[in-house]
Image 1: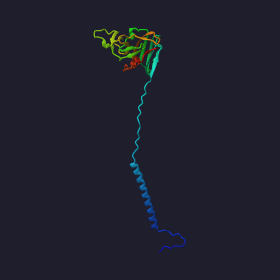
Image 2: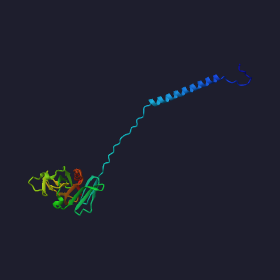
Image 3: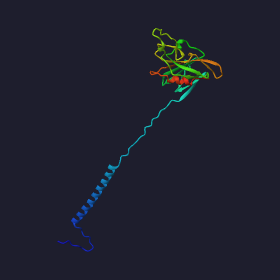
Amino acid sequence: MAQRYEFNKRSKRHPRRVFRRRLFFTAVALALTGVGVFALTYDIATEEPEIQTSSVVQSEVAESINTFKSPYFQFSDRGNWIHSKTDSTEKEFVYYKYRGAAIEHRLTVHVDVTPIPTYLAATRVLPVRIVNNNRLEANAVAGPCSQVYKKEDLRNIKEVIIQGATMMCDPDSPLFTVALAEVDGNYNLDFRRSNGLPMQIVITYQDMRLDPDSLTISQVAKTFQTL
């Protein structure tokens, strides 16, 4: 039967037309959604990942060079030397250099006094020259001094000459000890103070580390100066 229409009354749409219209809009919506998903996926896939770079900064903290003074002399070195008042006397100045709580170096300076051979003896010598009567020019540390002993020699503490410098040698000591001695002279180093008065100095050193070397005593010697 034909559908009746009444005046000024909204007619109902045919069910098939409504279904087709909804199907059309649904298809369009799905298509737009698919295009959006594709575009987003494509951008993510084609976007180059940002490479995070970090710079490696290498820093080296170097110990500053400090100057250490007594009433008679001064010297400079990296790190910190501590003057031991307990082990020192009026004419004997003892300095220790620490790493943490451990003593690694010992420096002894005798002023106007020559110690007995037991305290003066060393296993190596640092040949030096006195410049302007108040400072030192140092060569390289030489030794061990036991190398100058002959097979038939008694292994006693005695004076030996190495590179023109006379030192008191302890041939059987396992320690790394160094005595400063003047070329064409000996361990009694003759200086003059700033006031012109003569002064005699004896310098000995010990490196107490497991792997000792001569760097520290060489630095001390080349900066040593009377006051």
